[in-house]
Length: 195
Image 1: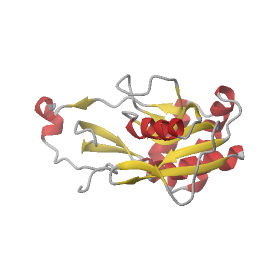
Image 2 (image 1 turned 90 degrees about the vertical axis):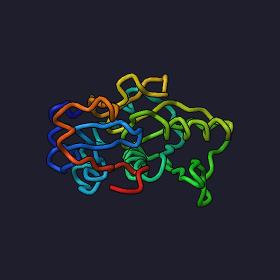
Image 3 (image 1 turned 180 degrees about the vertical axis):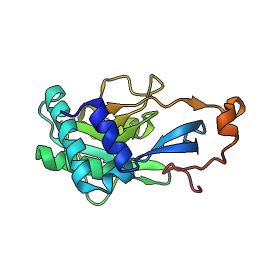
């Protein structure tokens, strides 16, 4: 299993850890941003991270029937975890701002479902996925992600199994530290329409 330091090194090598002034999808500001897509653009490095995550998943969850990920960020992670564990993997995508199963994907009744994300911050997408699981008469085994940066602000009350827990300080726009005030902000998140 990779250590925190080894995982962080891979994030930095792939430019998945960005520094600057960012406006997060929550509207809060930060001096750091995790762009997990950058990590996932390096398949061998993503495989290494996911191998370690899969070890943790096997230690914490039994009898997984399906892995469900939210589009778009969770698709590659869910696929790689499913590939390594030999488990069917599906994804939910947004239709009019609501996550839904499409493309013929379904969750058979009484399935044990693990929700896999790239990054969990507020847990909004993961909770939406869990609601889909429950509405199909199935069980949410739990949540897993490469990066957990929820820091107690998360909607998920269950344990989150992550490869790396990463605390990023966030600030309201009226409480910006001086160093952020001097940097023009960008909106890098998938829910933001502009930079």
